[in-house]
Length: 394
Image (cartoon, rainbow, N blue to C red):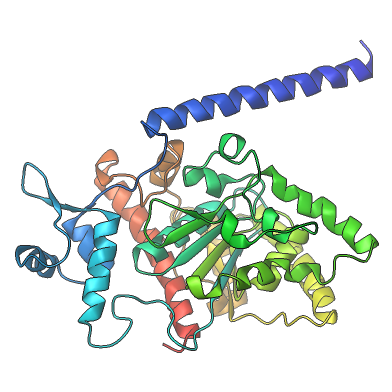
């Protein structure tokens, strides 16, 4: 068999495997989320709802008894369950009677600028998408207006939110539609509502790679302009609609990442505390700095409100990881978030059904395993929320 025929056979096998896998994933989604194969957010216990709202469970019970706000569902054991929509409605109600603005709706006020957070690293397995998904959902569940953008052609963030690129995005529908060089459309056309109030999504798929291919051609023809501003300019059209934008960047330093970095007001770099990952991050930081210098020389303002490193998949009992963590904290000080994201089977198991830990029911896990993982995620995301508030002067 000639090499040419071998190549043809390989192409055929890869294409067949791709189609089989896509069909199986589509069938799995239809099975998990019948009848219309769309996701819904689970209901929250009264304790979870109270924690999200920052009130006591007893106060929430009093509101229910007084007929104020939505009526929760009651289980046979008289436990109150609240939907995400119920929690949002309660938040609006509580804000009207709050002592000061922002007690329950923590988002932007007059004069606050949109926070655009780029979550990045160019090494796979650093927890980048897991971080972006849980951050976007936690911010939305605690009262922020959030836009999540999947800028990674692998589209894992998209799949986590119930959109299957191979079936649902056959005619575009990604950010590429708004940043392309020929006939870009309005960004509003690619924004989708999700099943979580306050969280919208711009999905991704392989079409995003077209921007990587188009930009060199546009530069050669003198038509690219300041290509690195394309994400920023697209977002300007929806600036007033959101408090925070979370961008899951591609795992490479290409034109998409550079454009996202130019738009970002905050940068979150995920690090798995293993030596090979730290060595990889060293190269990532060097290349990023060189590229930012080039962009700055073109007249762009590359200053950011903040930059932080997040330790991911951290195992407190792993001695080598602890040594590397201590090394990173010594080098970078408060640039490393205090809270690490712990490695947890609960997060992995939730991913098997294309869900985040905020979406799955606690009863599906050992209580200590679930609680430990959720506490870790909340600590990370609330620390980032505090950075956002500090940027707004609060």
